[in-house]
Length: 88
Image 1 (tube, rainbow, N blue to C red):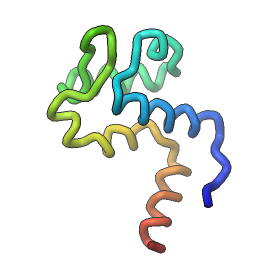
Image 2: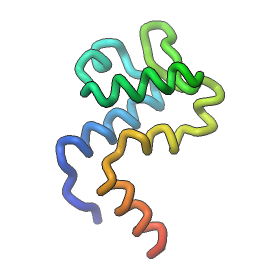
Image 3: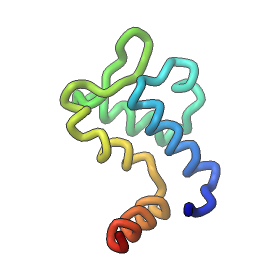
Image 4: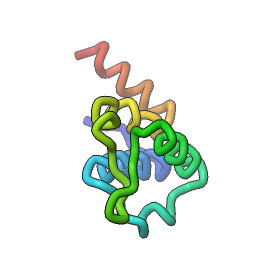
């Protein structure tokens, strides 16, 4: 059914799923620098928040959940997902 994923793609998927439940500080400490920059931007826009030592969506961020998660995916994953939608 699926395509083999790189380590980077697996990390992005795990991050996106974890973000939906809230990510703890220990996980956040081990993310790549690119993630930290994107997270800081999303915090500044009010789409993510630190609450009870967990990173999670704000109410407004929940409206853009899929778009926010997509920011962390590789171009390969995004292109494959779009191709699947066209086929379905």
